[in-house]
Image (tube, rainbow, N blue to C red; front, side):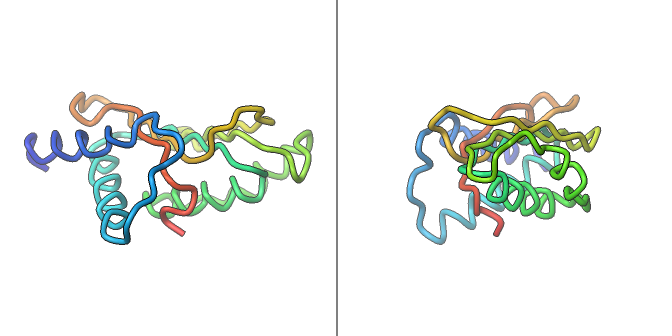
Length: 139
């Protein structure tokens, strides 16, 4: 991707940075958001994905859909099952590192809901933390 196109993509994603709640989006805007996020993550070496959700099931579904969209084939079931200290209807925060394929989950008392994507690597123009994006962006 050209530096100019990457800069435009990052600028678009920054519109969503730290916005709460995620603005209501038209179908065309949702598709642009998906495409742009995928373009920027392709320039990154790896991502940290943060999910704030109403419960562990919702967080798992969101994370699985984002991982699949980003091209990662990873079964979360064993890692999620280890999170037994989280009650079924308790708000949760999940952090997933795509480089290590590692997951951290904990109960969450904040009001934020959505997905944060932090792009990592040596391509400085593609680095950043973007979101909150809709939990169901790639569902």
